[in-house]
Length: 69
Image (cartoon, rainbow, N blue to C red):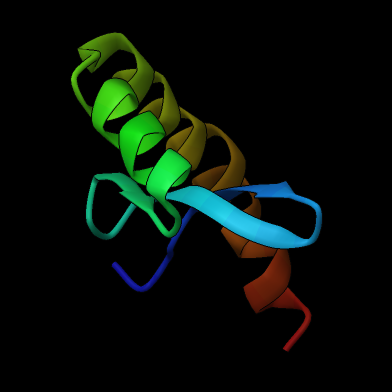
């Protein structure tokens, strides 16, 4: 439950929007980013694929991190 998957999108070193697995949606940080977040949040296939990426990337590798401690 303490695993968080974040996928951020940057332009010119400024974070525009990001997907946060704890929220389960995109969040925009600029005017353009808010529009992009709204568009992406309205498409269930995008949200579903990013939730699947959390399981694929994070949950399969969490044992590696905890074994080294």
